[in-house]
Each structure stands twice: as structure tokens, then as C-alpha cells.
Image: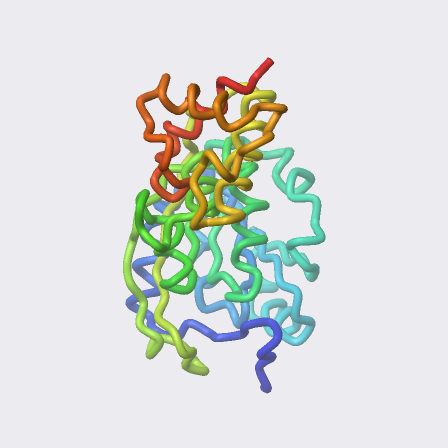
Length: 263
């Protein structure tokens, strides 16, 4: 069948990589596995030790194949819809968070959107296992002062703890993509701040990376009616140089900094 480039349909065909990914799920008999984008079921067929496997697949042709392949499985459910248009909470609301695990070979063109939707609900999940483009994974796993460090790094670190499972060569796919991939595990990071503080925290991060080469002082001039001198005083109080840029601040630095703007 003809694969659709606009849906980033690169199918994983390496059985050793598939088994490594599934192993990282640590499937238990009470688990509910949600697979986003099941394709031809290469990963799906190894998930049925779980209590239930929910496959979410947007492509009608793939759904026909998945139905034919797994219709005899009593614990298989297929949802033929776009994951980004689904109410995720409706899917998981009747299950225990400790038993819900999400897995996906992420379509490259919508990786950010899917990760964002899943991570904000990570407190209702046991874990997430995502395979993604290596360059994107490196941005998530990056550290301050690196070129790959940015707002998506901070977003991911705020909601989750991340662990690299394995590298995946482009040769493991059909058709072969132009880039390699990585498999990352996400688990819940119970280190949140209150909602008012959180809102300001993300506003500051957005502003700090909107003009990446500018200092925090310049990026936040006028923020919450604070002039440069006020912001300089805040930076000084938490031992940060007035010439520091957003890319040099850790997530804890941003949390402390945001605290000064909470009424």
C-alpha cells in the first residue's frame, strides 16, 4: 500500500528495536496500553499481555488492516480518529492512573503537539514511551547554555522526568527516513508550583526565548510593569548576573525568578 508522506508514515520494521521499546513499558496484567498511531501493528502485536490495548489510528486503510489483524483479540479496541482532536481525558477517565501507559512512534510533523497534549496529563498516567526524531529528543533532553536548550526543554522538564531508552537508526524503518530516532521514557514529575505562579513561569519562559540572543533584562523589560532596574534587583537577589540570557537559566532558576512576579 502507498504510505502517506503528509502523515509521516515511516514504519518501524526492526524486531529487536520493537522488543526493546515494548520492554520499557514493563507491561503488567492490569495495564491499559494506549498506542497513538498504530500503523500496521508492528508494536501492537507485542502489547496484548496487558488488560486492554487501545489503538488510536487516523488512517482508514491502516484501520482496516488493524481490524483484520487483531479483531480476534478480546482486549483490543480501535479508535479511528485524529488523536489531537480527541478528548484524551474521556479515554482514560475510567482507568486507574497507575495502570495507564502510552506508547507511540511519533509522526515527526506533529511530535510537539502530541507530546504537549500527553505531558499535561502525565499525572493521570503511569508512563509514556515515545520514539521521536533524534534532533527533537536532544532538544527535550538538553541542558542550559546549549544551542538545543529552549522553551520545549523547560516544558518537558516541568511535567516529566525523562530517560533515554535507546537510539534507533533510520535503517530500522520502511521507508527509510532522512534522520535517526531516539526512544524516550517520560514519568510524572511531582514538582509543580501553584497555578498563578505556573502561569507567570511559562510567560517568562516564552518571553525569554522569544528573542534568544537578548538578555533576560531586555526580554522582560516592562513585564508586569517592572522596569529594567526592578528586574535587575530581582536577578541580583537570586544571584543571577544582569547580563544572563534565558538559555542559561535552569528550570529552578525560572521558578525562583517567576516567584517575584506573583501577587
